[in-house]
Length: 89
Image 1 (tube, helix red, strand yellow):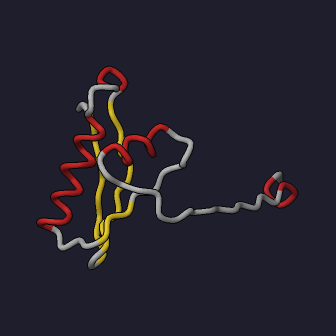
Image 2 (cartoon, one colour):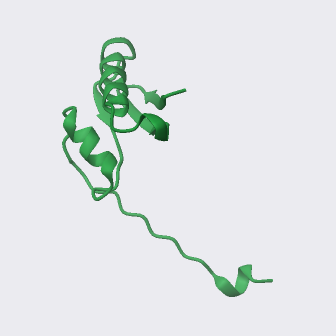
């Protein structure tokens, strides 16, 4: 398999996940083609009205998504807490 992309919908929203290209086929447009074609499919055949793509703004994936028309719209922030004492036993 050269590349893969997951997409799921919840009513009007389609969310992309795990977009990847095999290392032997990188920099050949595989991911951008997958994103573009999957976005078109979601809009035309899955009832999606809003497409959601989450990527770290400094990660190369963000540039791929922008190259096919996605634009940064919101920021997602996560916070994790690790209780070292509780989990060291």
